[in-house]
Image 1 (tube, one colour):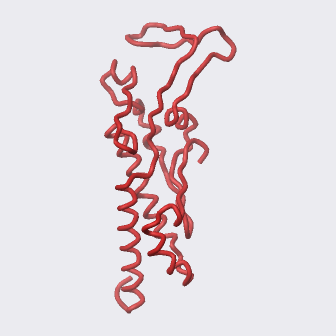
Image 2 (cartoon, one colour):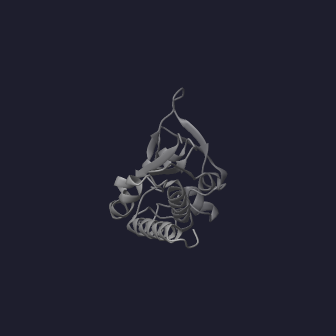
Image 3 (cartoon, helix red, strand yellow):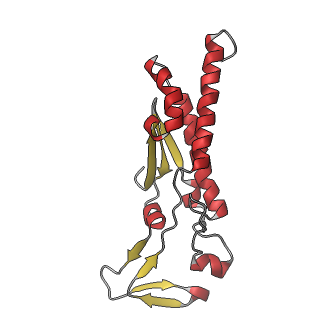
Length: 172
């Protein structure tokens, strides 16, 4: 993922680390759990586009386009929101997007002209605007919240319970 990604491993989830460390030591493949965590975290990230909030709950600064058109910030076409995905292995998961403009939107950026004296773009109500620079405010979309941590611990507990039931001859 070249756009924006977060990587967490067992050490990034202290409550789950203690529960899962023993399974790793026994050679248990945690890939199915990590895949489930990835699906959850992608969903959590996509939810931020619906609520237009940062991982800590702070509202995103509304974009001019969203204010003028009555739309949602960072959701003009839905491409960015729909691009989030995850990758998992036996001990970690990474989720994010390969959309190149995700990082400047997440962290904020200053855009300046490279080969001209000014940037030119269509602004409010279709008016042509010239500017020496444009400042994109940070609108964090990817992160790991306390709610995410609690959900990961619940997923890990369910995983362990399923493995224990399977080892005892119950349904996997």
